[in-house]
Image 1 (cartoon, rainbow, N blue to C red):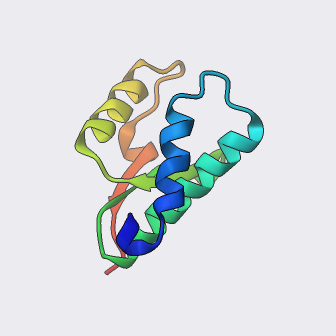
Image 2: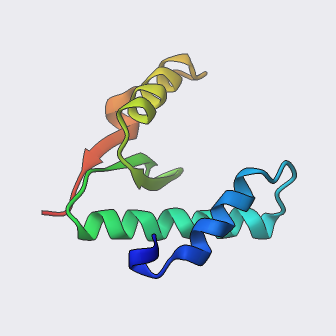
Amino acid sequence: MNKLGLSHLEKWLTNAQNNAFPRKQDQDCLDACICLLVGMLMAMNKDCLFVGNMDTGYMVVPYDETLYQEIIDRCGNSNPKRYPVDWIAQFKIA
């Protein structure tokens, strides 16, 4: 992160990891960090996941095989049942 000038962000994330009682402001900062990371990965043509749908809301997160499988499992265990093909898409900007 130092190469990118983001050393202060690394420190904040380390502190946030140990915060047992995050405030809304802390959660908003974490959301912003995820957005920054996704934007950087997309600019580097890396895979991301689109999770959710246009009707109820969605988010884009960095692709990770373990996360992908966990979301598939959660779809199968949800009530009502969700079908992964309707809720998860792996993509990258070409």
